[in-house]
Length: 544
Image (cartoon, rainbow, N blue to C red):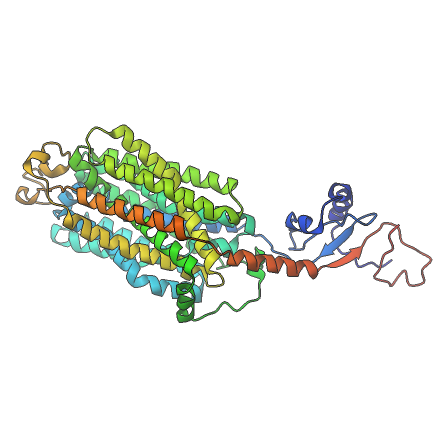
């Protein structure tokens, strides 16, 4: 007897047994709770028939390798962040070891930021044209090569150390824009709807985790003995080496063969020119508000990560305490962000969530910056750092997800890449300008400083002479005031004027509606009318 029922028998039994459980459920509700079989075919039972009905139609198919891709990009983000913040927590030790000024140490961070500005637009175009796989492999090898040159800078003769150090940092700068622009794109391309925010959160927080790891390792290795700088550089080489091997050998495709979500199934021409995309984003008022808010928020966080040791040590807080503050921020932020994903999965709540997070985060950061002006306030500094981590770092993936949601159907790489590019430009300006407007400490203030301004190299040091070993700290009072003003203005602007437009969700719902009406319903029954003369050839099965 021929039938057109071509689904696995085990699935058939499960469907018939689940008929009673599905009674009273509307078709739209059942559709939202649908599952995907290994073959990428939607299978569910229809409650109004006696034995159940089967619906067959291609639907999103998830791929197990998505978790490996997620782990690879997260580790690349973490490694890049570690390399960027290597010298931030030990700026004075770095200045002593390489016989350079604190402004030169800041220049190591500025090189990465300038590299992002220069290479960023090219990276966005490159990823859009050649895909994620080629992009992350190039990032891995460029960054790994730069890290190797940084290690070599500690072992070559003294005249060649500075050129090798800056050359390695430049290579790291060229690779970083590629990986930062992949986070939102990877989440959309590889993950289904219900996992997309989680994937975006994990990869984005890889950057803050790298900041945390660097904040622990750098002071632990060189804070007491800056001659251990080669050990620090070697330790920072290991994660990027592992991540590069994972990207090269493990990531085989830029995207899966079958779409993992309804939004990726939409047959829509999204291949706009860069000029059309930029014009479209420029006229999207909601995106402009997210862009300004996210750029300032990210820039201040990056600037604080670079300058925090230089802000705290003149007031009497040692390097390891500056690292502790960053660890508290990032650890609390990572835990809070992951928990937030599970409690707020509906994109409809992201607008009010982002406003609450931004308000509390910026109040906490203003409190932290105010406390940096006073001595012996370790408890309050740690408390404000924890609150900023919980609310401020949790805000990062929320703002990125909102930017993609609002800017649809523009490519995710472009919309998120512009945010990172703008934040990088602003951060580079702040890292240059804020120390420049901060005066050096006078003699009455130097007695409270725990910076290495009074630490001199031994006379037989292989690195520098004692005559040039002085590192003079600065008073960052005006710098912190500038950051507080920016935080206040952006918070008021975003809370009062920002209104979200859920463009991607609307397109996704339209695709679901189209798929729903394209289903072919087929009757299934274990009993067939054998008296029918066409029973052997018919495609219809009678239900009893």
